[in-house]
Picture 1 (cartoon, rainbow, N blue to C red):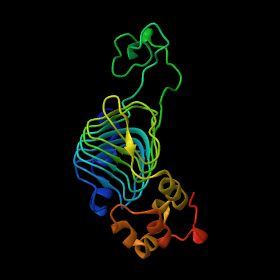
Picture 2 (picture 1 turned 45 degrees about the vertical axis):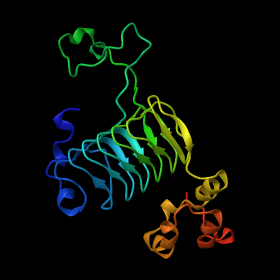
Picture 3 (picture 1 turned 180 degrees about the horizontal axis):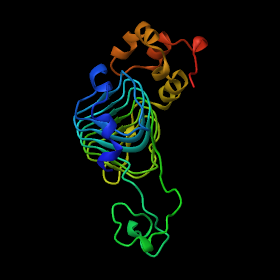
Length: 223
């Protein structure tokens, strides 16, 4: 994407007010994030919705994506690379848009909307130098190993890796995964997180640990 899409962000007040937004990061007018978000050096966002306490680290480029709360995009990642139509004689963009070409405007016939939004859930960790293709859905709690190429949807709490990325294992047993999807802790207000913070410091938490802090009868499903 050219400079014109990001020019308003270069001297944005957010770079002065938001503690973890780098002065060298940039974003277009459609991208949104909060004061608790983090944007690393030379990170770039185009049409991105970034959740609370989520971060996009150094040199990562994210396009046409929705990212939940408490998710981490490590450095040098590419999320959403853009798509070309594949059902024409050629996929070259010179035949359907003037930019960046413009040599033969008489060749151009615009095609319909081909953007695909990438959905990345809450509490997701995408390792350094990973690529996530357009339109992929990565479920809550998933982990993508460094250097992976994700071309297919990733289930909640799955750990995937490789090129193309394949399932390695799940972070927790199924009963814990189901319980976490009921609780949706990532949607809780900060004061509630504070009151349950000891749970987040337990290595290898069991279902009993989780239910101690979030009794089944008192569970709240946060949409």
